Length: 151
Image (tube, rainbow, N blue to C red):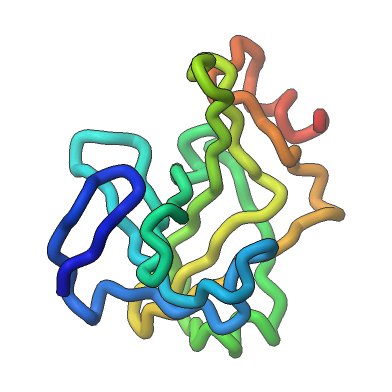
């Protein structure tokens, strides 16, 4: 099927690439179908809404910014997503890039997106109690250990 995207123009995707978010994403609950697009030669990708071309999020693996990033997914969320093995999980974090200031880009480590790559179901998880920052600078000169304790 043809898909008009925010960052890549019109592209062709297969139906099985569509990731279903039963609850949508916080602030975008009505959008429940997304596709993950990532050029092979880039650290960044896009989580593109299938039914709203202007809605696309720049995303990155949180492990690129914070190599020891970890959390325990609660049993109910794992069940809702149909997860049974760690190898089935794709973990993404949303990137915010201030207009005209890409060096000030931040990544949201407090609310990762968890995707089951087998059944294409996803959810955004809020980790308010874990100490991860909502806005962790991607190009920060400080260590990633310091990022865990700051917000």
